Length: 192
Image (cartoon, rainbow, N blue to C red; front, side, top):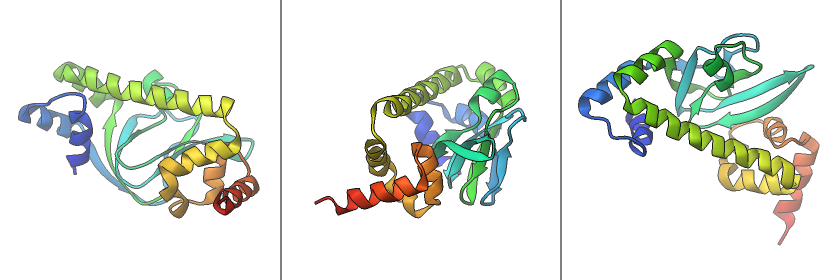
């Protein structure tokens, strides 16, 4: 259950056997069904989730339009981060797109780990740095790239998601309509 989490942590810090046990004990295992809402707009996100299996979607509700902000896949941490860190009501929803096996840690448990395991500060900083870089790349792509280029980049890294989730969610993430996504996919597939 903790193998992938330890593998990720091991890229940045080395935990002793005792530290690994303290680390593991801070998490709770959760199995959730497809289409389950973990965080709602207006709620304070009290947990961060490490995804062992499944997909989570972070999205916004803009006057009935659901705009996908991010699709979290296996072996990533997911949450409504601004709500979690600021202890403020979320402006987003976090929902499962598939049945998920998650390792959850609460805000209070995370704070305890910072004190008990000083290496947690390094681990969380490194993960936050990766998230920042990823967010910067996504923002840059929206500012610089055409919808077709955004599609190509997404397909290169996440092509399997076309078989796992509805295409209108991918279109929303790419900032295009489902019809535009269909046209782009057809053009790309038909190019020699």
